[in-house]
Amino acid sequence: MARKSTASKKQNNHKTQIELRGEVRAADLDGRQFSLRLDDGTKIVATFTSEQEGRITEALRDHTSRRLRLTGRGEVAPSGKIKRIASVDALTVESTVARQPVAGAKPIWEVALEIGASVPEEEWAKIPTDLSKNLHHYLYGAPKQEE
Image 1: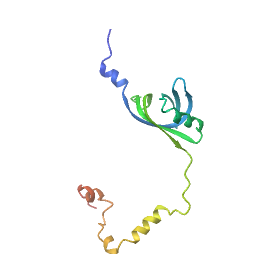
Image 2 (image 1 turned 90 degrees about the horizontal axis):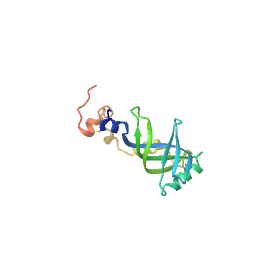
Image 3 (image 1 turned 90 degrees about the vertical axis):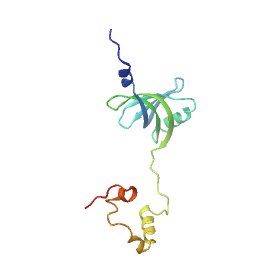
Image 4 (image 1 turned 30 degrees about the vertical axis):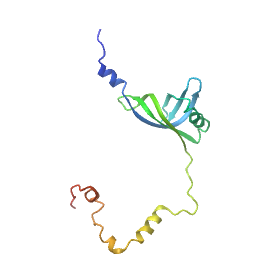
């Protein structure tokens, strides 16, 4: 009887660093498992520790306005799809509600214009005219691109 080689077993069970974000749809507190629904509709089951339980239940309770960001290790199919979450390193609950701008705060482009206006003309004249095209040349010494 033929045996699978160790190399093919490792390839089939390749664990890699993963980061997922999704909605907690179910939690089994006794079994310490939860279901995470990703944006594409895929559901993935993972286990959690007692230290992570609070974040799981918070994300489940507020599932309409919160998403759970999970980092850990997972088994990934050759297609790139995650087959299974092997371990959870960190969980973060994030709000899906867009933040409102701070009243009276200036937009970033206005701040940039103010800073630019405070730079003397002779300093602006020192900036190379091909800076955007040759940024890596000026920063890192890469070969200069000619027009």
